Image (cartoon, rainbow, N blue to C red; front, side):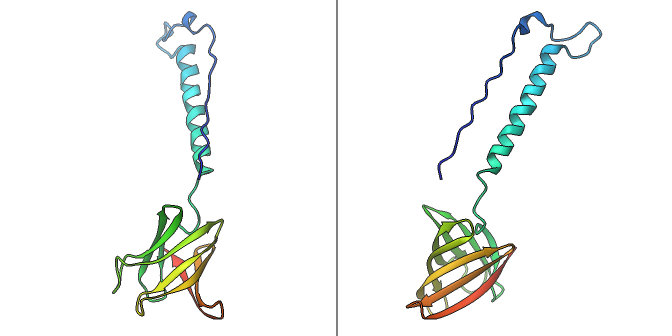
Length: 145
């Protein structure tokens, strides 16, 4: 996903005429401006980073068997890897998509068979569906950990 780069320029005229500290020991106008500029830049960067939040499918999920499956970005897809249970470490899927709707392949680790798959995120659950010829399908709903 391309990232947008924001550039901020602060024009602070005549800063050289203001002392860093006032005679009474308080911060001078120069420091107040710099502090405000730093706070503003930090707030803008935080709000910009929120725009690039991860897809809703990314994270750790509890399967119907009680295992933990991690879904993470890999290349231009999202890889589904079991982290716990009998098949820990095995990649069981690879999906593409965005906005809560994903398609790709899912593997049943107990039979080692791969099916056309889909995943749909709704709140803290994801419905994973594997199909043969789009006719014979099985679904599972996983919950976010």
